[in-house]
Amino acid sequence: MDNLVALYHEMIVDHGKNPRNFGVLEGVHELKGLNPLCGDQITLYVKIEGGKITDAKFSGQGCAISMASSSLMTQAIKGKTVVEAKTLFEAFHGLIMQETSLDHVNPILGKLAVLQGVAAYPSRIKCATLAWHALNGILEGADAPVSTEK
Amino acid sequence: MTTQDILKMEKRVLDWDAHTVREDFPILKQTMNGVPLVYLDNAATTQKPQCMIDRLSRFYANENANVHRSVYMLAEEATASFEETRKLTRAFIHAHSKNEIIFTKGTTESINLIAQTFGKACLEPGDEIILSELEHHANIVPWQMLAKEKNLTIKVIPVLSTGDLDLDVFEALLTPRTKLLAVTHISNAIGTINPIRKMIEVARKNNIKVLIDAAQSVVHMTVNVQELDCDFLVFSAHKMYGPTGVGVLYAKEEILKVLPPYQGGGDMICSVSFTQTEYADAPQRFEAGTPNVADVIAFGETLKYLRSLPFDSVIAYEHELFQYAAQGLSEIKGLSLVGKPRVQAPIISFVMDGIHPHDIATVISQSGVAVRAGHHCAMPTTQAFGIPATTRISMSFYNTFAELDLLFNALNTVNKIFE
Image 1 (spheres, helix red, strand yellow):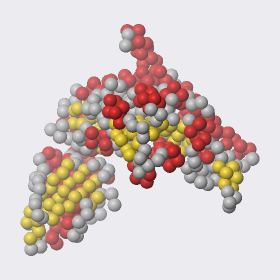
Image 2 (cartoon, rainbow over the protein chains, first blue to last red):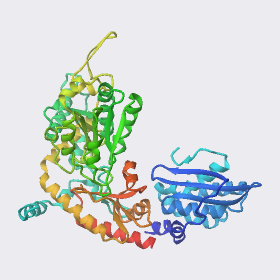
Image 3 (cartoon, rainbow over the protein chains, first blue to last red):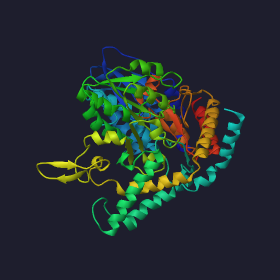
Image 4 (tube, each protein chain N blue to C red):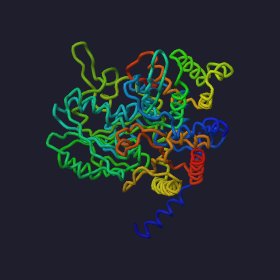
């Protein structure tokens, strides 16, 4: 039950139900993220001006984890430079995949660390990383949809 | 249903002792997340009785030899055990001859085999295949691949909001170019039992061949291929308490006689030279290479096990479980069942207001409850209901009413977390 409480932290349930930055941005970088296993799909919109992310939104549908993760991510990347956003992506990936120590990533991630409970549920990791893979795709200049099944 | 019928049914339910039968399935004593396992994902795969597990291990420990080849005792016995399963399978689905039973690796391969042999040899460009919106991807994709290759047309019988197929549309879809109806007996996603007897009758009148996907039905009801008068019927051993890696393709002998081989290789020939090869007759013609000997033999043990059960009582008990589950689920706050077909197998899909099926499945797994969440490899079905995914419970004769109570409690926990 402790794992469950960690996974469905109050903040995740809140962001899952009432996702922030939910919507569409026109004329900006956009990329679709698909999780064919469970049917989650989101589209991420990122406005980059002078090497800085000035706005971010997402649309689509999915489980509480993918919605909350997308919501928290769009909040976290606004105002960050492309380089800072990449650092965030790597820190988040390290946290979820349990590849990096919490002491190292926690100061970088701030409240994004609330998603660390996902690590105990291997089948749900892709839900948490979906939006992040879409972000990484945009930052790397991808124009084809990213999939969690590559 | 008369009072007499109800009394008879109740008598049969009382005859069934799920607690005793659970002893036959060692995995049911397992725990998951520290609590007893409540296995409600039987439509994905069923658990295995000890007798089948023992048979598998006994074959490898004491009896292993290849089949249909050598003349020493061990090989003779392996061949006899392998062919014994073919006979048991014939009896299980009431086929006319054991030569109508072909072993494959599963339902999916059985359907691909039909597409690659019957489909290639007997269908012409412009011919039409009828499928339904309740099909598993295994009964959609092989036909799409064939249609593309041979320029065939695929038509689809729509599903009504009740979860029943729209039979009026089915009849309206028929044309002189319709050559095959490929339809599932029971929807794996929402549990609808299709009126295949009636559908086969319509097909017969119009000279259309019929393939029945019986992957979900052979385990929940008696299937008699001669009474049904279908041309092809396919199912998998692992969804009926048998091992993985064994599928069955039943086809009428008269059709098998005219079909070209599926794969080429050993075991499917009479004679081979570099100028000409003569193929063996069915079933060997369609079983190239060394088959899954051990699992087929273990599957025979499953068939004997099933034969030893009072099947009428099993069916009645599973129906009681279904009714108890449907009632209990409807009482959960914010929960809606997907479809309410006229007749339903013990398979129920549901959705909960504002809560994604994957979150539901994760939360209840913490209480030991194993269910499936997603599109169930039947995306057209969930799309027809305008939803991306459902949570599905699928029951077996070894499930108990107490287990369903645990499911209901776990679903109340889901509501608490997400309220």
